[in-house]
Image (cartoon, rainbow, N blue to C red; front, side, top):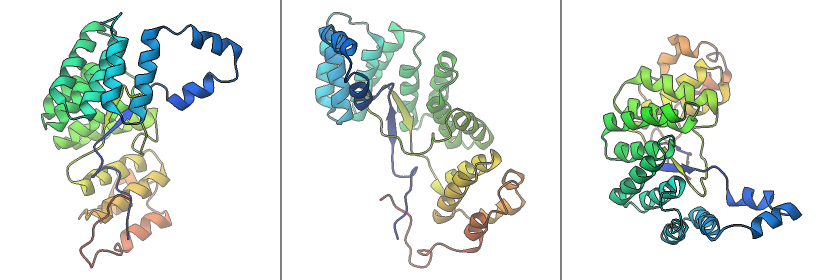
Length: 271
């Protein structure tokens, strides 16, 4: 049996301000929109083509388009940040850092490059530095669910579980679907998707959703926690954070039944 494991195998998701499909939908069938499109500057047209290539995961081509977009405005912070994202996706981390820092310098109020610098530090297991970048990013964007999520991941990696839960809760309050898979296009902000010890990690997600009264997601992540072999799964019976959901039949089923693969050395894997 194959199970969907959202957090152990995937690395990063790229969030965007708008997708090419949204851009097309918003600009079709309208005379005014057509006129606006025809008035698009060459730099903006190049950036838009870069966004489309990012959506297709054609990162090298995207960089070329974004570089063209910088010719007239070399300090365009959003474009500099997008070039950093493309290089990060290509695992060119040092170059990505260079562009993120240029973007942050060009617009000190822009949170995305600071967040993205944090994701590179996280990947390099320099969690304290990651936390520092995420906090700076939140100063610029205090209502960003992806940044709160990233900060929670960093605290979790440091085994500061209460701080992790606090930040996961803040992320969930802004966007309850924050830990579900997103398909980022035209990317501008990176979201962390990997964590050590997925059994424990999914348990804390279940605990956070249970505390918020979200039964559906509490069930989903508690099941993942069990399937990843979390040893203290039965602790939910006396955990006050699970009090609102503990009587749900699905929670009880998770506690009473072992996964079907428990006897044949299999683990949940991504579909």
